[in-house]
Amino acid sequence: METHAPPERPKNLCQVADYLLSPQSGVKKRDGVFNESRVTYFRGKGAVNSLLKPEFRQTAVGKELGELTREQAAELLGSMIPHQFFLKVERPSDPDVPKNVLQLVQYQSFSEDSVFVWRYEGSQLRSHLMAGGLLLIVLAGVMFPLWPVPLRLGVWYLSVGILILLGLFFAMAIVRLILFCITYVILKPGIWIFPNLFEDVGFVDSFIPLWGWHEPEEPKEKQQSSKKSGKAIAGEEAQEDVHTQVVTDETAEKISKRRPMVEDAVEDES
Image 1 (cartoon, helix red, strand yellow):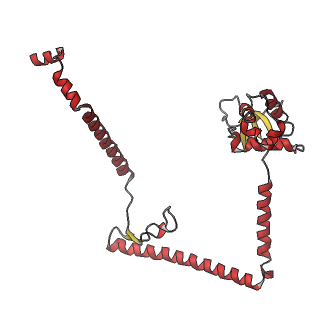
Image 2: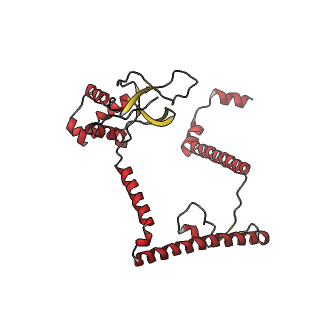
Image 3: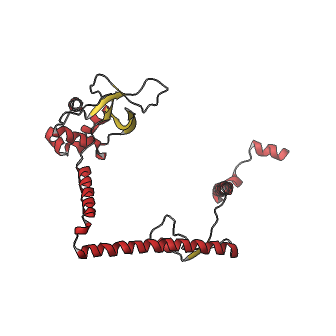
């Protein structure tokens, strides 16, 4: 399918689209596949409900448009289709095709029960600023020979310091591995220097404690059996708690004073 460049989009409609794409709009966005590429789609009813919220009326475009009725909100969204902010699509009727694969509808119109796929990508200001910043960094690196001498000297010292720190880190990792291999043979289960060095902890916690014994991982079967035994113990404790709660002093006194029942007489006769 050929894709044509969208016509020039009005500024107020761009602001409406930016609001619908923002999290504060509350429009549920789902991922789908359209023209063999991943896209985001939404339901027309959710977009209409979003334009009727007080949050939309507090935006600049919302103040300009004023309070909208449901029909006006649907008409506003329908006016965005010719500018290709989004396109009307439908899910395939073939049960063998996944539901997230979307197909373009020939006659484009807005309705609350329909599904629409986004073609508008939002404001590109942030992307342009990031691209400009990256370009400036590359130019600054290329023009390094033209930098002032003190600045070049400072960058050289900084790079050397970073390389020294990386070298010390790799040397420490090699030394701790060699020490573990030696202690694993002499003093099982082995000793690690900085046992939390590669754990998912903070920078300071990576070097605490200074050393520690190697803790072998338990097999999965033992872990599952320990979990089951823990659940069984917890269940027994819960049952004991229930029994201790039921048989209280008041209950015992009532049982001792109650009248004999037929079941009691049968038990006595037997």
